[in-house]
Length: 142
Image 1 (cartoon, rainbow, N blue to C red):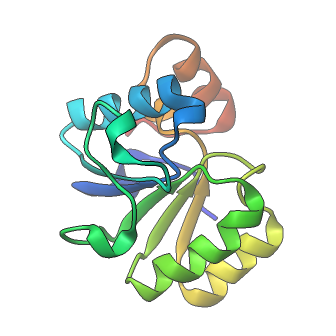
Image 2 (image 1 turned 180 degrees about the vertical axis):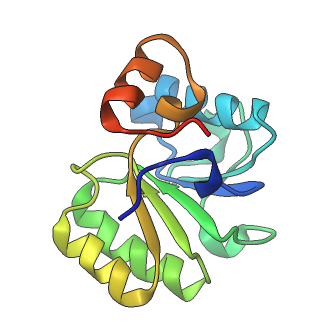
């Protein structure tokens, strides 16, 4: 596992778990990444009509799968998601928190050759309390 830095992200990211339950947070992350020039592909099991941004219901619908993903699913779903992402060629996964990825999931990623980090992208690109939280979490704003 690496510390999160801007070099972790590429020009595109797959946002897995874009959900109505956390609409405000998801939209904030989406908008922040987009404003930084990062193309975001939002993926949700919920119908896309509920969202103000383009959201895909299935990974097979994506025009392409980025090599980097940001995952906010609940932990029971994360193990399955990791396998799917690996099969689609994802090389880096940012997990939102330890509630999303436990040590077994991180070990599985390592075995699959997937680079991982645990943090919120707002710690890297946001301001205020997000930036302060990122400082204490060791996020590098290179």
